[in-house]
Length: 118
Image (tube, rainbow, N blue to C red; front, side, top):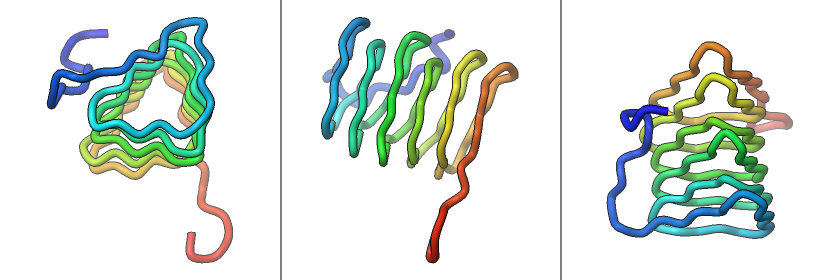
């Protein structure tokens, strides 16, 4: 992945969930989050999010500034700036963002809201 696709850092802090790590719970941070392992949660919030090719993220709600997805993501994703879905990535859920880029070869399944008031 080229450096141009990585989210811009707005500070010095960053968190990496490494390969072989499984984390369940609520994650909230003001800096960047890189997922190389597995994260399952109710809420994942970060300034920037990178899900590596080996990474998996399942969350009811994902709130970020921007996201680069190369692995597998399931959930409702809200990004203030943009979402970039790389070739080979798998995304199932809904996306709210001003800019969405989906590379050829990505699997992108947009879920429609259910119930009233959607």
